Length: 154
Image (cartoon, rainbow, N blue to C red; front, side):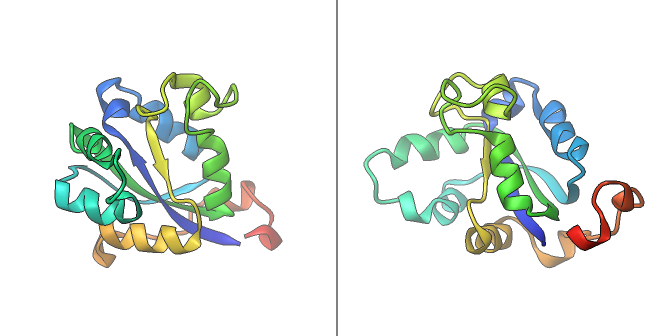
């Protein structure tokens, strides 16, 4: 089943100049980027995105981190994209993330964890609507799609 999900390359990804390498992993997997922009997360946007955490004691440090520098926001789609991307990203703590995952390769922190990926279809839709207007989404059929997955898999 083709799904669409939100992925954020957090400020540490940008500061460490890892954006291209991380994006390449998603493209190499055969996933399709349908929207992308570099932006700054405002405190208001952070509160919308992290609404379920806003009342927690540790939220101010999370907001401080996500607003500390530019991010790259992306919508990525493909067969089972939500699960596939979360597995590619790896465990939240880079020290615990499996070798070969994005956090396992580039991360060594729980808080500076490089990437956000939506955790399910409801969150993916809610988060996509926070970061992208409909006219910013450019869905298309990649010409290489028949070589990435069989017709009955998409």
